[in-house]
Image (cartoon, rainbow, N blue to C red; front, side, top):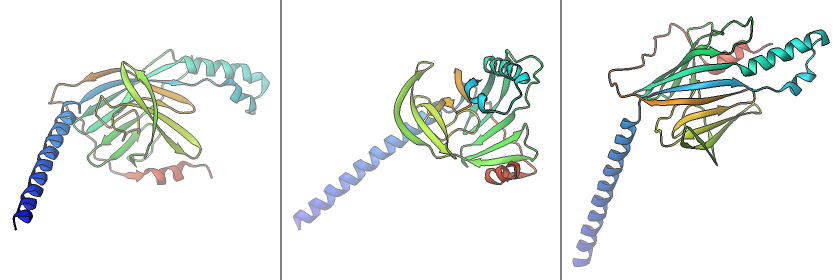
Length: 236
């Protein structure tokens, strides 16, 4: 009977030790998450210029030069947005425009609210004619490539939908699962997004220390999910 009793106490020691290690890990993880959960981030959005792609468009020759000059001016425009991420909620919204093309009205950009406890995104304003469009976080595919943005080592992730590929660069050192617009869900703050038409790059990252600040998600009278909204606006 000595051996079974010894084995019993030995296994109990292993279980207790494992439990202590788990608790220490969770506490350290929680403190890291709490210490880095509130940030104010500025993003620069820029359109990509591809004049070759416009050659196939049915544009009258009399208008083509003006059209290409407009695209060049559009690519030189700098549009800034801000992200406030505070205590598991965030708001992404328009800030300002630099170098807009002549006779171009400032767009009515939508607002992006995120609730990280529910993993839900609410898009409202802009051209959305309902209270809000609700989306879920997208599923990313992780890559091995890395780049440096604002001194942070950023890893690559991609998302493919209908032959369109979105590239995200996220910083694990900034442990919030947020990013510009509806992009989120990676294991670190997204500092850059690349699509076929544009880029969104963080230009400033500030840690928020005022614990009294908070993001309030509005109560929307009408909510439509993202897939239904896409079918609604898709040309027939």
